[in-house]
Image 1 (cartoon, rainbow over the protein chains, first blue to last red):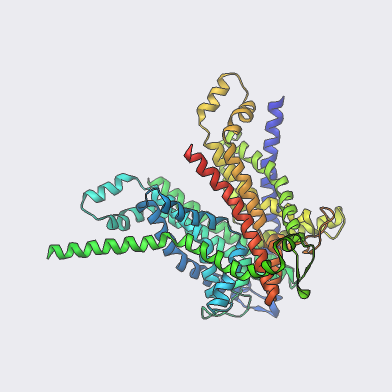
Image 2 (cartoon, rainbow over the protein chains, first blue to last red; image 1 turned 90 degrees about the vertical axis):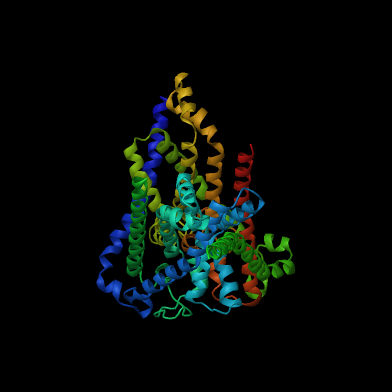
Length: 271
Length: 291
C-alpha cells in the first residue's frame, strides 16, 4: 500500500518535471517558429527590433563566443593539465582548486559587476565585445577546467607509461598522447561553455552593452541574442519577435546538446 | 651535438611546466581580482552608511543618498525559499525515481530532458514567465501578477536540473550491496530507499539543495522579468518584490557616483552570501575525504 503510493508520487514528480519542460519549449516553439524564416536570420533589426530580423545580434553573439573561448580556452586547458598531470596533493593544489570551484558558484551578475569596473572602466575598454569576452572568459573558466581535468584524468595510465617508455618526455607525452585522447571530453566542455555564453544576459548587458548596429571591431559595443530578447520583452518592443528570438535560442541549445552527446558517445565507443 | 639538443629539450620542458603552472593559478587569480575590484568599488559606501543601516535599512532612495537593502534581501530570500519549496520535493522525487525505480528507457528520455532544462537560457525562462505565468497569476489569484510567486515558480524550474543531477549522482554512488542487504532482510523497495539509500546519500542530497539555493539567489534575468521589482517589503506571496540581483541589473545602466557604489555594495553582500553557501559544500567535501 505504502509502496504503491510512494511509487505513484515519484512517477508524478517525473511527469511534472517533464511536463514543465514540454510546456515551456512547446509554447515558445509554437509561438516563435512561424516567425523564423531566412529573412529573420539574415536581415538586421529595424525600428529597434520591432521589424526586420536579428542578424546583427547573431553576429555579436558569435563574436562574443569566439572571444571568450579564445581567452578562456588555452588558459583553462593549461590549468586542467597542471592540476591533473603535475600537481601532487598539497596546499598549492587546494588553493588552485578552491579558486576554480568558488568561481563556479559566483552568480553571473557579479561577473558583470567585475567586468564593468575592471574592463569597461579601469582598462578603459568601454562597453565592447572585448570587455564582454574577457568577462565571459572568467565566467566559463570553471566549466572548461572541470571538463578538461576530468577528461585528462580518464586517460588510462598505461598510455602515459607506454609513451614514457619509448623515450618521450613528459611534455611530449601530454601534447601527443594524453591531450588527443582527452580531446572529446575537452570538446564537450567547450560546447557547454558556448551554451553558457549564448544564454548569458546580465553579465553581457553590463560589459558589452546593447548597441544594435553591426559590431566590427572588438572595441564596438554589441547586442547579443539574449540581450536583444530581454530588451524586446521588457521594453515591450515586440512580443512576436521576442518569441522568435527565444525559439532560435532554444533550437541552438538543443543543437549544442545533441552535438555534445554525439561527441561523448563516440568517445565511449572508441575506448 | 646530442647533448645540446637534450639541453634544449629540458629547457622546453621547463618552459611548458612554468606556463601550465601559470594557467593553474588562473582560477584563484580571477577570483582575487573579482574580490579586489568589487570591494574597492563597493566598500566605501558600506563604511559610510554603516553595515547595520545598509543591511537593515528599509529605504532604497538612491537620489536622496539613502541606501538600505533590507527589502531586496527579503525579496531574494523569499523568492529563493519559494523556489526551494517547490523544487526540492520535485527534484528529489525525480532523482529517486530515476535512480531506484525507473526502467532504463525512462532514464534515456529523462537525461537529455534534464540537460535541455539546464541549457535553456535564463532570459528565455524569464520571457516565458512574463507572457504565461504572470498573466495566469493575475487572472486566477489576483494582484498584478508580478510577484514572489511568479519568481519562485520560474526559479523552481530553473534549479531543478541542478537538484536532479547532483542528487542522482549521490544516490547512484550508494553501493548496491546496501540495497541487496536490505531487500534480503525482507524490506520492500520503498523501505530500502527511505531507510537505507537516502540516509547513505544524505550529504550529496544536502549538497544538491545548497547548490540549488545558491543558483536561485544568484539568478538575475529570469527573476527580474517576473517579480515586478518594487523595492518595498512584501505583504504576501502575491506582492511584487525586487531581488538583490535584479536591483543591480536594473540600475547599473544609469547609476553614477554614490548610487553606483551602492550597487557594488549590494554585489558584495550577494558575493559573500554565495561564498558562504559554496563554503558549506566544500567544507563538507573536505570533511568527507578526511574521514
